[in-house]
Image (tube, rainbow, N blue to C red):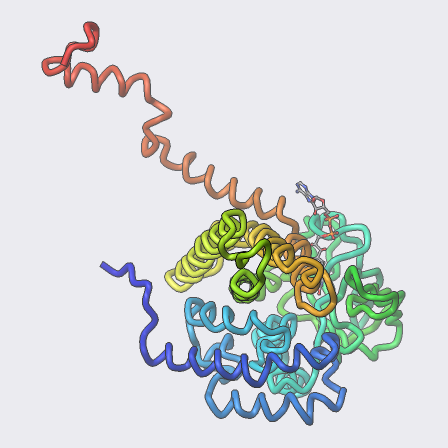
Length: 433
Ligand SMILES: Cc1cc2nc3c(=O)[nH]c(=O)nc-3n(C[C@H](O)[C@H](O)[C@H](O)COP(=O)(O)OP(=O)(O)OC[C@H]3O[C@@H](n4cnc5c(N)ncnc54)[C@H](O)[C@@H]3O)c2cc1C
């Protein structure tokens, strides 16, 4: 019997240390530094402020724990990583301080699997050490969730590939040393077999930034999500990652665990919102009593706790399923978590913000950033609808595979059978016992 909801004491000690460190040393960065500096590794704040924190994390053996042991990681399973990410979700800077900032974490895994030795030396090592940033360039202006509409092409020309097309929302491109770009290399087949991944240094001639798109609330030009035009950008043949037509296999390498980490960071963010809700409810007096005494406030707190607790267990269970098999087998659980994430964040942050009145919607509280994160979670890495389709397909597949397992489909026959079986005990016609 192994349904165990406890954390082993040695790992709990690590979690306790992480919680204290994030609260005392990392959260002040959120309060005192602009958000975009997280990705601008050339800014002096990284050497002066972030590097000493990263050194402390490394000393504790907690740097880049998502990596396998062959890359210097701990080989922790997803459950442990989920518990760590729950704490890191309380601070925007924490993933960077702990060496697991997206998209660098996923890009590092791609380079580790598919890069040449030269590429690993040039890009992977500094990426793993948190000295450079990277970008992932897949979505196109006219197509995001449906890759069949992608048009960006890569054509082989001698010892080079020539990439032509447009990409949209390539996060952190403005700070990145390289991008991993998806382009169609074999157009006369399905995109799932005809698209390939390329390593493209961001200073390669032919790259044009149409504009840096920002999220809502950011001023024009402030954003970090680049609209990029690849004007016949030439890269050496070696910059093809994996084989031709492998783009989607490679993309999956980085998404499974990553989605669970995002979800668990959302748990941390929601817990922070709930903490603030509790603090407000106990400290604000209205009509002669603290807000905590009002039943409608209690309703908001109870609903938030229940929603958060359900979601936390759902994410940890999905992490456990990955640990038992792999991301591919856990795609139902991962997709279900992806669907739940924006809704839980939306509901809890809204209640927390609302309970703070004008202060809640002011720029003196962190709710605005959390609020924007809710719709973002419903779109980045594919919109909710697409993941719901995955959930429904997986659920229906189980029914199709073993329909006899689900007796309700044959209920009338079974009712007949059951009535006959118990007829000597109960006279159903007369309703007598
Ligand atoms: C903050 C952020 C960061 C991102 N970073 C990156 C990045 O680094 N690299 C990158 O390549 N991309 C990135 N993206 C892009 C992201 O992957 C796409 O936005 C996402 O795949 C959706 O594509 P789209 O925006 O073109 O929306 P569309 O595909 O146009 O979808 C829009 C809406 O249409 C509806 N819809 C779509 N498909 C279906 C369906 N099958 N059934 C029913 N309704 C449907 C949904 O309501 C959906 O929200 C990022 C996005 C955000 C918000």
